[in-house]
Amino acid sequence: MKPLTLTIGIVAAVALAGCAGSASAPASSPEVTMSAPSSTPAPSADPTAFVVTSPDFVDGGELEEKFTADAFGGQCVGDNISPALEWRNAPEGTVTFAIAMTDESANGWVHWLHADIPASVTSVAQGASGDLPGVAGRDQAKGLPQYFGPCPPGPDHRYVFTVYALDAELGLEEGFSGTDLVIAMKDHVLAAAAITGVRSGPA
Image (cartoon, rainbow, N blue to C red; front, side, top):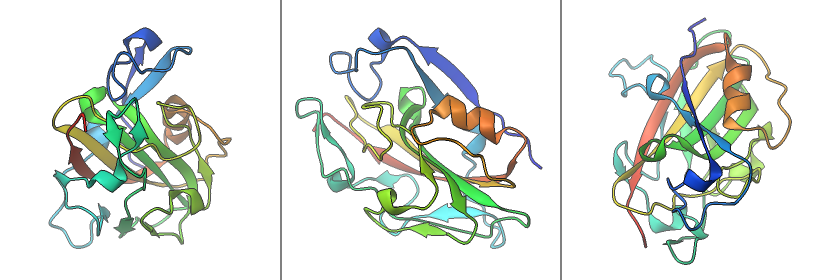
């Protein structure tokens, strides 16, 4: 198994400026952001490599407005539709997949988490994040088990969609956090692949 190396930063709620903007961050307990530079490898030219792609955007390309949230007083005015993702060439021994969408321009701000996706599932259709089998984690903006689209306060925010191939079920409960996912995945990651979308704001 390949070891999982993630950098975790703890940020006080009053300083959660990242994606939400300093005036819009929820006044709750401190959140833990999830930053995964080592788990977002560049696309491989190897046709047998574990990869994730999207019919809705190219790696490094702009995310359409419909994929953004409608939040924070007009900072973003989208439809909060999750983009489609497809992944292939999972390594032998894969039991489940997990998905993490983070804003790497905002210290790993968590937008979408989903775990215990069966190995037989290799895609999620546009807008179907809520229909994925498995268990949903919480987004960092509203603290709900759902997809929360990009809502950047400035230009060129990088949204990284990472799919992890795991050798076990994680058994997390609905509403788990990025920290919960990192801890649960330790020693279970067989491979990770990622695709990055870019979005600028405010709207």
